[in-house]
Length: 154
Image 1 (cartoon, one colour):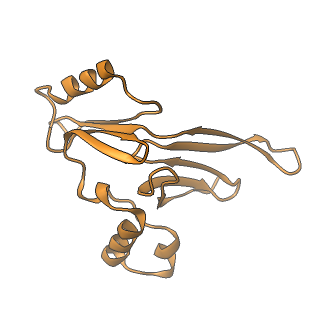
Image 2 (cartoon, helix red, strand yellow):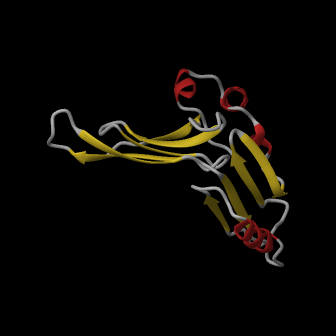
Image 3 (cartoon, rainbow, N blue to C red):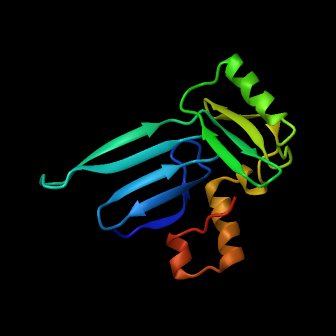
């Protein structure tokens, strides 16, 4: 199966998301590590005409990126609004001795507004998709291929 992985505009927040597109089957997955949006489109019945697909979609409500001092990292995307006790749990994890607080962050996303609760997201995290795309094309070269497949960078 052929797959193209590149940055794309998040349908939820308008920032940079990652898309994994299977061009032979028209299946795709989009994950936004800015707002937490998730979309997976998979073939349900390949023998139907036209082919039937099923979609799994979650609007994003934020992201928790935890990077340990040893380099291990995890990213949690939120498919619902966080409750106060959930926020406390993530803030406590962020405060752990093994955590690299400079590279970790907790962000919520509600009604189009981002709220950084702790840490500092990456430099590119704040950019709207078009500004991110322009920056990547300037950095990696504005070629015909790159115009359709925007490079991924945190």
